[in-house]
Amino acid sequence: MGKEKIPAITKNREIYLLVAFFIVLLLIKILLVLPMQCPSIIGDETTYAGNAKDFASNIGIQSIMEMKNPPVYSIILSIAYILGDPSGANYHLLLIINAFIGACILFPAYYLLRNYCDFLVALSGAVLVCVVPAVFNWGFYVMTETLFTTLFVCSLYAMNRMFLTNKLIWVWGMAVTLLLMVGTKAVGIYEVPLALIAALFFVLLCRRTGVFDQVKQTQALFIGLCALLIAGIAWVFLTISNVNAYTAYNTGGYLSHLITIFIKPDLILTFLILFIRETQILVLASYLVLFVSAFLLLYYLVMIPISSTSDWEEIFSTGFFRLTQSNNLLVPALTSLVFFVLLSVFVSLVLVTNHMMYVPTWQYVGEEQFFQIFSRYLDPVIPGLLIIGIIGMSILNFSRNYIKTRNVFTISLLVSIFLFYVNFPFLGYRIGDTLSIFSFSWLSALTHSEFTGFCIVAFLLSVATSLFLYAMKKSKIYYFLLFLVAVSLVLSGYTYTLSVSSSENAYFGWGGACGRALAESIPENARVFVFYGDEGDSAEISRYIIPFYIQRAISVVRKEELESENFTISLSEQGVPVYLVSDVPLIVDQRPSLYGYPGYILQVSG
Image (cartoon, rainbow, N blue to C red):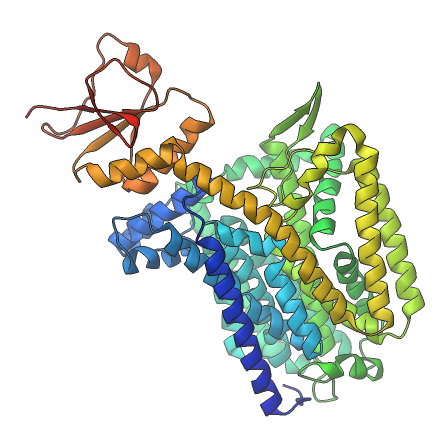
């Protein structure tokens, strides 16, 4: 690599400080998850926990093949059942593992920023990535978003190192990271061809600058690995019969619907409206200025001749490495990285918009109908957007063209305010789907006065832009980043209190209390049948919560079955004790209640 700017002892001090920040962040996360008692994103969390429990009980390929979700996250979570009581729920231990995974994002974020920014900017930027709501709030749920987001930032660091060093270890590191992403969320498969496109783009830039000989061997290997990954994953998806179970969605249906959108004019208009709405979510989640900085960085990299190194030497002088004649890959590597992140953002926007149209969830105000808002599937790319936005701020800070920067951000602010006024998503916030922007849900109370909501948004964006421009003028952009850290903590704190409340409601509700009572009282060979007096949300919650505690499947009894004159429970084995539990009194053989809830047992003779 190139010449180091700072002595090794300074780098060591930075490492010590970074580790200290990591420990503090991890301890804070662990303390915050202690009040969490029970899964509140019911179906997903309990499914991942169940997969982890099954894998811990029977470690092997067969357990992985039987999972109906990508296995990597559940395999990591299985540590909770290996270290703890395998018969218990271990929810706190699951969350602690999740907190550790989320805190680890600090390291790739810092070292990626440190290649291009000074120490204070890199450190404050990495902390911002850790506490931004799109990352921080997922630490309170046993969900794959935490691992997938960390892996995405790791892939950015591995890609950048691969471009800069041309070492085979980073080629393999990038390939392994991509495989882990696919094994964490099936949607991660799109990152494989995007990485291939970014590598090809890097090769073209190197040809343009005349340094292709420095990279041709490693890039050829990486392109070959990507092609092999694409072919292998495609073969698996085509040959495994339960592909839809693995992805948890109708993959073919989604693809055909996406194609249909672009051949029907009415669907195209709806798609564009929802696409803009999801883009607004990214603008809010990245505080506008970092969103604009990310795209302005790509423009700056492309428009300024890459072959001229004089301007870039000062720009990159604050990072670990400086641009020299022997190391002229820094700019092509950064350009390709920015291209990869923005391409990932665009594809994510297309996929989530297609998802909203294919599986629409509606909100109503009077007779007016609104699409449900989603940010959950955009959250993993937000840290990447923030990172390149911060790098963009550093480069703009050295451009010595404050007036031009001010004009660009002023125009961007006006355009953003106009789009919010035309199409701001006031409605449709659900905490599990909009963690990155859920703090804005209080604006839904202003739906009868949308102009007031618009004024609030315009004011907040104006304040953020003004503070950014002031920090740029004073060359103290880390002050602005620390301000965003404080804002993120406030926004995340609001969502955290609601997360705790949701967890407590699930824990103390009928499903949680009944599940704990059954876990303490029923024998291992007992079978559990559950009747729900209410077939609404409480039934859905209990259907997942009870198995989470008793670590076995339950059978649901319908109302028509209970009302049948010949109500029976057929068993595969005689002499097996059967528990029939309900949240309402039943006219059957009643036995002592479980924790105050009606509990029933039908004894089967041998």
